[in-house]
Image (cartoon, rainbow, N blue to C red):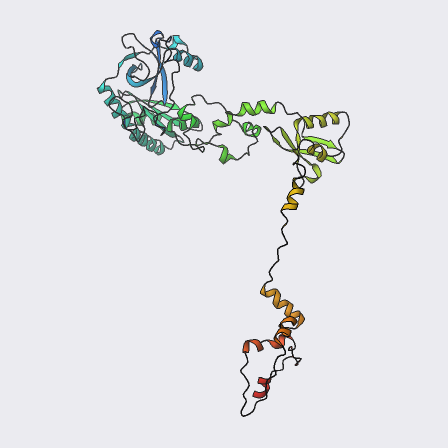
Length: 439
């Protein structure tokens, strides 16, 4: 009963985490149970002479007789008679809880013939730990042999009896497998009695363990002991998208937790009307789009506007009224009126009050340089008239003489003037004095 991070101590209990087998790492609390009747004064576990013993950290459980000279109780490591040798396990339940567990699993008391031998001593615990450490190399070797023989099967787990007289191989396969040659190879290599047991994908994930998409340990490896069939109808009743990757667990099958809330959804859906896929109105026929189970709402849209129209939420009572009207060959005018009857209206006057308080001026949009240049090209002017009046008339350039030299002009201002139109002083387009002088 120890996980990988806390090795078992001499007494068989986890030695590192000090949580008595409840560290939550996946191995200590596999299929553990709590005896709620053990703390009650009137209940005596010794009165009921049957016990439930778990093997390999709760992976498998069986019922045994509790002889008076043994007098084992819940949590004790015991040596049991398996009918083909002996094995070491831990008592998981005792007393009246065993009777309830047997009733749940439909096991009769007369069919139980195995019994406890003694309380496990130190030598028994050491041998049990030694055998448990050899199970993984045996499983790896068993997979290699099965692959060599070309069998379409997967060895999921191996459980070796403490006295090394028998080994149980758990495997998964799609169909029936002829493993007679495989058993001969196993018996030749391992020198032990072989038992092959086929399990399903859910049982395999329960034995291996892991972390689910919810962030917690798998239910099948911690507390779920019986597996019920799960279908896609459970997802449809809960309005879940049929996405195989999201609805599948680590075993590759549909998640068992889809059945946990199915009863609540079925109870809520019982109040919805049947045959309400279409409703007739004078404006046209409406089609049911989706259903909100817990808000008791049904969303419809007009058949002519399917996929691009407006959704009309209706209460279940309103839908029943429209169905009753359709049975009498009567139709409402429009779903918009029926849908507005139950929606919660906003408080009156809220928008009017906010409009007077929050009255922001319109934001002035700043023009970009490109828009300015495009406006100047259209008007044929580089500067606005207001700027020209503020700066005054542009001085004319003096003619070239010996004493007075013209001031050098900015080439950037003259560049491209022919494309911009005539100058502000009225000179013709493309007239440049500097170019004329050079010529």
